[in-house]
Amino acid sequence: MADHEKFLQVVKDGYTFKGESFKIGCAMLDGAVAGGADVLIPMKTLNRHGLIAGATGTGKTKTLQMLSEGLSDASIPVLLMDIKGDLSGIAAAGTVNDKITDRCQKLNIEFKPAAYPVDLLTLSNQKGARLRATVSEFGPVLLSKILGLNDTQGGFVAMIFKYCDDNKLPLLDLKDFIKVLQYVSDEGKAEMEKSYGKISTTSTGTILRKVIELQQQGADVFFGEKSFEVDDLMRISDDGRGMISIVRVTDLQDRPKLFSTFMLQLLAELYASCPEEGDMDKPKLVMFIDEAHLIFQEANDALLQQIETIIKLIRSKGIGIYFCTQNPMDVPAPVLAQLGLKVQHALRAFTAADRKVIKQTSENYPETEFYKTEDLITQLGTGEALVTILNEKGIPTPLVHCMIRPPQSRMDILSEMEIDSIVSHSKIAAKYNQVVDSESAYEILTEKLNEAAKKEAGEKEEEATVKKERKSTAKEKGILDNPVVKSMTRTAGNTIVRTLLGVLGLGGRSRSRRSLF
Image (cartoon, rainbow, N blue to C red; front, side, top):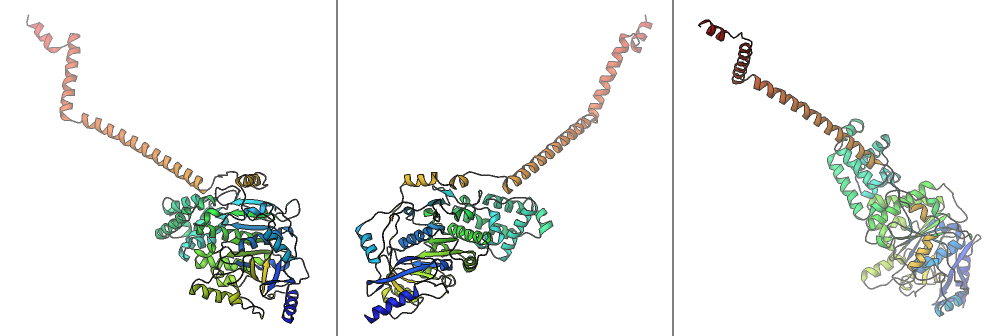
């Protein structure tokens, strides 16, 4: 009993906050919910990032959904990366069943089915508002990191961007970049080298292959206009709740390069666009990245370093990033060290490697006298998790075994009809789904090359005409200079003259003939 009372006191002291907070469940001891041991999260520290981890089927996606609801109710906009396609149900009200009723009674909460304000976004041709960005917005540094270029190749990309800026050649999509790359490697090489330095054919070939590789993963649908404005991710609905923007990326599971490209650009744009805020009472935006291992799966060292830097700095902009993955070791250690909120669902120990991961994971959590963390991680039930967060002073709270409250929205996907309804009523879908093809580097250079080709063709035609005329004149002159032709001409001329004189009666030979008679 003494231990139970001590446990309750530890939980109350660790999870009681002065500012606005949100109840995510109740602490458990010896497998039972401890009455009155509410586990709250303070809104003030939600910009300190977080991790939701656990094996398949342990309830981590529903935890993500429940957290999104609490944030929306607190007028905090949310951005969800929906890889598996099972988060769209947050736009529809949930239904009560016996399991939910029993859990709510244990947690001493009331279940209120509710639909939340949702916008559906897409990187491809799925239904929803299209997310795009121009090549210029990426800039040479970020684009070089994404393509995995070395310093020499990255310097050449910077040279191309400088050349395009100086010559007013907008880089909107990948075909613009490819066209400029081909132009400065061939027709424009002399012009480029004169103003910007020597060009390596090897570098241009390597960069072109890297861009084509990115295209093969479908990047053409992402690069272009109209660019998505990050302010549209931070909207409040008409009823005062934060908008939940769901990016439907179910078709990117086999294209991790494109997904990591999009995520890095989005994080960089958020960081560049948002002003410094310091410590706010609640964040301006919270982003949940489901199946987060896809970001790091094919990321090179430069890309990982860029992500780590942004994660460290974006907190001061009032933005929180939460990674959701099966294995906490999927997240690189430097990034993992920046995550203040940790919700660890059950892990399974089927192999020696699994046991090693579980041991490492348990060592990442605060020590506790109430649990043996390494054993408990494998014994957690569905919808239960080990939880620790940062309090208002930035100190980790005591580790608790928590029964998580259920989402109030639908724990299933939307139908096609429901999706169509959301998209048709969206305030931003019409804005971003217009097809825009502004004049850019591709069109400008193509026109320039066509004009040059026409001019060259005209010059060649004129030159051919002059040559033809010269040849004709020379041919005629050659005929007249021929001795045989000259002899024939003289003979013909003499014959004509004699004939004319004869007609006039002046021919010498005829007159002599008349004198004989």
